[in-house]
Image (cartoon, rainbow, N blue to C red; front, side, top):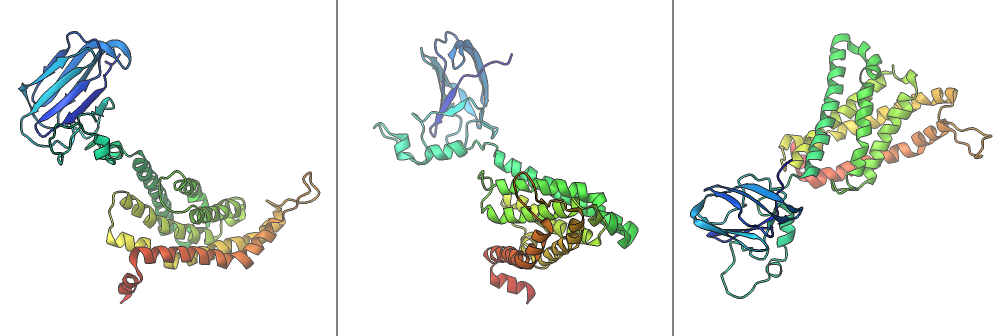
Length: 366
């Protein structure tokens, strides 16, 4: 069984580090103090009751063991450690990861700008933002940002997925030429469906505060692609052999091969000029082509769905409801197709102007 660790509260001045070990009724603690390390073990009453407790601290900088001391009280064990060199430590430990049992001693905490005085001070009153900042970094202890790790992993997985898709398509086209287009869906359809289903997570990211931005635009885009992929292509095997599926998958993939690396760079606060320009430029030719291919898929599917009556609900039925899917497809192409393309193109144009500016756009072509 692993040794229990007591709560340890630390503070510092320019010359000293103070530690309070939250253990009651300690008799004779076992303490080994070196220049950059402290071993502590004792039997006492702590957070887990009456047990043996211990910990090891590797200090950020050196202390003077000869000038340092500790004392045992009924409520705690107190350490007064003398710094070898005067100065403010960015954190207590050498490693940037903070042990969960190490806390800030707010009663004694000072910062570099403090002026010594004998009057009692309200640290939280003098520094109203201190607690919020400590929660985020605790003065040098950078907690692992799980959101960032998740987003890097997600974007990397999507990038790998679309890289696989375009690689298989390229190899097949190199080997078989235009004849390879007819087998595109059988070759990469599974990978495309997986990547597309994963994109529903992007709709939820803003809802959970993982990313900034709205929900409506990504929802429209993801639902639109999913409808084409799962309802228009997956549900009708006769579409699998059409060359338009090859072109549609190629356009979707090229967009994502730029988008996901851009997002990864943004997470690390990097802005490679070429990648940023591609992210906000590649949509100009590809989005209209993608909408055109999606429209062709829907148009070619109308007679197939008239024949199979898939997704159509006919009367009579128990709920007295009728739904004719080919009619909905026609209405979309006649009424909603161009407005939907206009909304997406306008959204991307505004994002481009916001990121690059109209002058930068013009300079790229002059």
